[in-house]
Length: 437
Ligand SMILES: Cc1cc2nc3c(=O)[nH]c(=O)nc-3n(C[C@H](O)[C@H](O)[C@H](O)COP(=O)(O)OP(=O)(O)OC[C@H]3O[C@@H](n4cnc5c(N)ncnc54)[C@H](O)[C@@H]3O)c2cc1C
Image 1 (cartoon, rainbow, N blue to C red):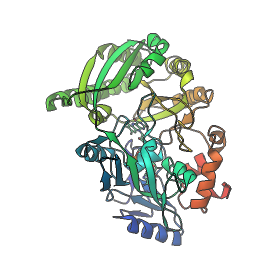
Image 2: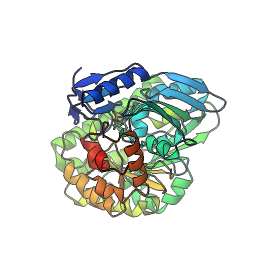
Image 3: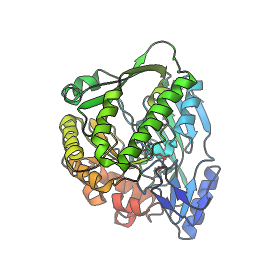
Image 4: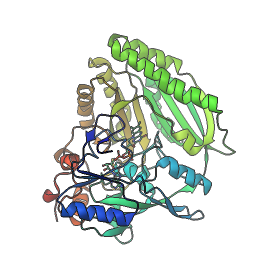
């Protein structure tokens, strides 16, 4: 393979060198070689970002051969893994140790390093994003040295490396804190959108994990609540799993999107029909089986983190854009919640957060819709998901992150020459040369 392409198929590059190191020493050798030859370095995870975060014409590293569990302390809940391990592989390894990640997003195919680099999150008003589970980070830096960033020895380095957009170096291993394995009851249901927005506080705080979806032109909110329960998991039969995850969520939904793309005037009716047909379902299973599901319908996405207290009005404002802006949108708006954390570039840094995501089906025009929604998010000091589309620059973002300068200082220390920069990093974080020393 000489070229690279993301999952959505709309970000691609042809790096001068594409390498698959097998361990940290091989990463160091690749970084040193690239630096000597004057080439930039980026790392590809599983390619599930929608932005050009990965792209380079220099050296692209894939850590797909670095997926081992290196060490585990089941009693203390600490697990050390190589950075290329996927969340799915990590979840299964943790399960065998009687452990689990406290919270997860809605897919599990990302690499651990890729997921934390962009601030990937799930939902749960009392729970933080994935990077908050990181106890320490092993990083190969621009001069080829390997550093272990730990809160006790280098608090700012550690807080920077947890959500780094790949701008500090190559993450080769991380130590994570897990929790005892748990069972979740997941209930999907629906209620009028206005009622959901009026009862938002109660729905978020009354459930371990609450999120809602609302289709443009529908009066309904489709709700998903996941709560911890005692007792054993009750896995679905293979047939049931295929029916729910593949037939309904992928094949039927994909067919609706294709019809909507071919005949946009039908979209409002299709969206209302899907919302009404959704009904109620209940599952009880291991936590990670409830959180994640397979996604075959391709799309592109933008997601913003705003203060939780503004969530209801922001959802109404986004619905006004999606319903009245003249856009053809077959995908729902997704609304999730996370607790504040202290990673310097975490979109949830320092504030209770509501994430609002908008999507556009593959092959449909997305940019005018996303720009219109972004204008709404600007009014709420919105911070974009680092792995999802947005149009911000370092200039607009620096005002929205209280500890922006601290991140810039860590970057100037670890990558003074911008070896790990690319166009995306330059746009959203500024060029390394401009960072304070
Ligand atoms: C279908 C779908 C569902 C999604 N669901 C969610 C969700 O529920 N919640 C959510 O928050 N996000 C979600 N996302 C976004 C996704 O979690 C992020 O974009 C995540 O970064 C993807 O991980 P990845 O392994 O594919 O990384 P990539 O997209 O390959 O890379 C992401 C960034 O990490 C950097 N990177 C990767 N590995 C390393 C490394 N070892 N060292 C240094 N830098 C590295 C890359 O250079 C890049 O900048 C979803 C995306 C898709 C396509």
